[in-house]
Length: 138
Image (cartoon, rainbow, N blue to C red; front, side, top):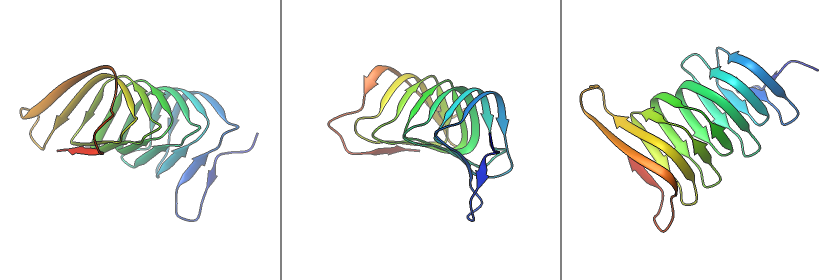
């Protein structure tokens, strides 16, 4: 099996055919369309989980975009974007969040600004976001 590819824009790609068990870390933006079980840390960069991405992992990144399935917690220092096809089972902690119609979340969402004492916590128990346009909370 060959190593993950890095495209010309500097994004590291883990394709559909990859199955990784363990810790994934890198010094660049990361796009996962395969399967990962363990933890994912692109060292303060952006993580995108593609539509075919399937993760059972805790994620730490600057920004996270979910189009596929994630079973685990997300900690994003800047923002989280949940696209229409996203399915997240786990807690989310971030400064900003965007949720498109059709995204499914089961877990707790904690949104806070620069000060940890000022935060908003929301519990999303197996809910599908519907009937409203994409929302951005900050």
